[in-house]
Image (cartoon, rainbow, N blue to C red; front, side, top):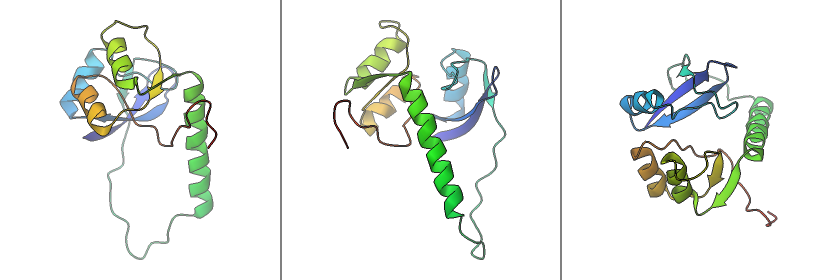
Length: 142
């Protein structure tokens, strides 16, 4: 699995995309399957990425207030994305595949898939991504 920072051309939104390989990214992008999760723009390019370098032992830990703020912003972004997405529950793999094949209306969806089901979707060239935070089932209070 490879992770790229991506950026849309219209609004310059930066987001993360996970792919099986660099070739998978190139193939999906060429077929118009990589779109901005915020605005839906299909003009996508790689954003500059900092290399992953382990922290030195003498560095101070991250500021807890900054971490809390970043997590709150991520949760807010996820909530805004879910407001424009249909919950399909355990039907997610089948619904994602039907949308990809043009057998169902193209729209943003979210639901549940096992790790193996998600890997199969990615292997088939179907763009999926995990959500950073759990999503309560509709009608259930958590």
